[in-house]
Image (cartoon, helix red, strand yellow):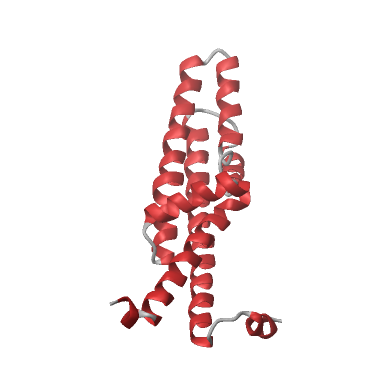
Length: 171
């Protein structure tokens, strides 16, 4: 199937290999970046449950790690209800502190560390990855976390191929 599909693409074989290589790099970078960030959020989320005296920190840390894969809502599906429960139980400042703690670490991971990890794995500027993720989510919803960087990768790869192929004509 792969051979058949590659024959349909009207691009010279050398250029196609470069495109396929970039797709592999991107896929690996997305999986590793999202995985490491999800695990980190799970550890910090479970630690927060422990520090703030909430029950089952290991369980909820694990749930946070899995939920962190969902863009936009992610870990907040766990920590917002936990903060609300603390507030309802009369622990206003504890609930607010818990919410601030979670918003702080999850924002840093999602908007600073994750784009850097993915960008490093894709050999792409982390700001471009950040724009790709945000723009992809805005245009395509949750799956945009993959589509955004994918579109930027395709564009940059094709621009590089064009630049190398037509270098003499551009001068």
